[in-house]
Length: 246
Image (cartoon, rainbow, N blue to C red; front, side):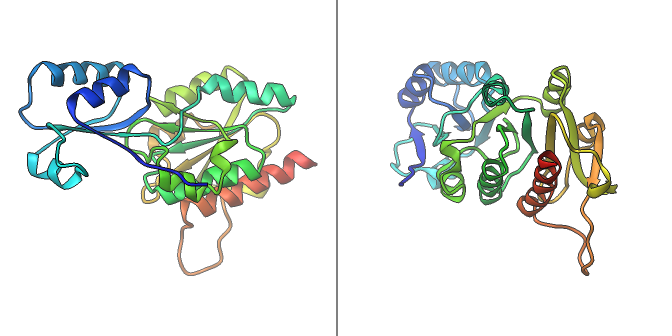
């Protein structure tokens, strides 16, 4: 299956994309542009919580594929985002305790795609990602997921820590990956569970880690002290699978 990137250039095109409901991952606007259409785009971006970066005309020229960006370029998702409620509903429909992946600022699209693939194969009901400082559902993510993006809902939220708090009210327990935690084999990971995986370089952020009920470490015997984010997600996910099958 072929996937296409959606790069939208030009003021009218970006406004129409917002009005048609197309999900915009990020927006680049030329410094100093303040005319009517640009102000409309800024309002739409604020309404939809789109991350906006203000850059020079030279930078936009580098991004542009058409040379006719008119001071604005938007990057749209290759896939529609789901809602968090869609993920919970998927669990209810299967009669299963919710199993959710929560990704704290995964910025590498290859890692995101690989994690979505793992989530699908491990039987997770969906993936939650933040709107800012994170990869969106681009064509690279779609390809790396090997088709899993067609079956695994991905919800995008403004605040990961707040979302965890809200999901705790649904009876879901959260475990995050961190070297300083308890060995994953010694934790009870059965029942409604959210697996939190952190950024490739910094790991899970402090505020998000404080919201988690458990901190799991993966036993390591080598000379380096960390795994790739997608590999760590796979290792922990299958310990959860093992316990859920017991």
